[in-house]
Image: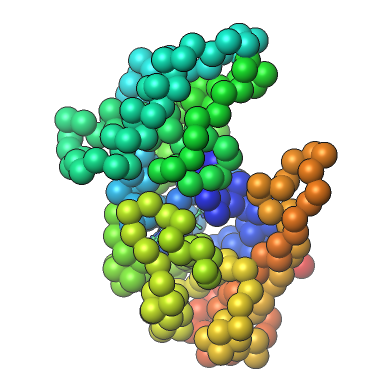
Length: 302
Ligand SMILES: C[S@@+](CC[C@H](N)C(=O)[O-])C[C@H]1O[C@@H](n2cnc3c(N)ncnc32)[C@H](O)[C@@H]1O
């Protein structure tokens, strides 16, 4: 939806063909900006009844709750002035507004209530869309595009009106603001597919309002090993993954990508290898629902 640290805006297209087509419930435990879900062609999942967005960050969960009422969020956002294409001299007040909202959203204590939820969502969008793509929103500086690009607040507002996006918003059944373990326990079943995209190993303190440490990575591995449903887990590779998800028990797929910050023309590409670990596929053993899903999966993927 919006550029975000670790967001799967480009990589989502590689991940989607691995998602089984006959799922009934789709859950993202670490929803972020929900890029994988928004890249899915929903007509290809005829049995899909329940879609669950989850993120431990209350600002993300609130943004998705408000986005389900897309017209109301659009109206709220329309109150905020933003940079104009072709206007080179951006008014100084816009940067002041950005700083004020960044301070309010990330460095002040407040509660999200029924009364302020749209205002908070709009201010969060205002900050997320005016920092360098995918950088840390609580500390990043305002980017003045000097009229060269369309303001990303407006691009997001367009999405709120776009029928393709609305089709996806309308399909979201529950927006949760839980720890991943709680959401797995709540929605796990043999008909559930989880796309799992945790903070990458050693980048854990990138995310707002909470940490994700080694114990959390280990706890996640334990939850996934015990799961009844299917999962695909995104990571950059690190040694412990071989112990937690041995290659003879899980399917490992890898692909090289230019890292987001470097994925621009004229910039030397800093490559990273994306990893997807799955508990279904040809060489999976002891996964209760593999038989049920495998034919569809083979058909789609091979
Ligand atoms: C790599 S990002 C997900 C990006 C997402 N796939 C996208 O395309 O935008 C990881 C997300 O996990 C969330 N998170 C961190 N710790 C969590 C926890 N314990 N439970 C659930 N979500 C958590 C962060 O707030 C962050 O949004």
